[in-house]
Length: 92
Image (cartoon, one colour):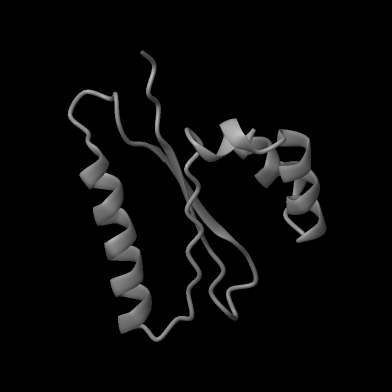
């Protein structure tokens, strides 16, 4: 059974003029667990709160959701919402 959990973290801090992103693979990597991803989310939210930075969190469960929704529909929705082709390619 293959179980790969890839988590992407994106931040759009106001005034930074760009996007900060980080990709991490959580489970099925020696020495890592899902708890590492939970800690990453917690740390990002704590730092942004302490610096008074408005932060959005996007959480994608690629294992379950992508099995039930037409992929072509998801890509079109993301395009309509203004996500870049590079962002969509990372998710694919």
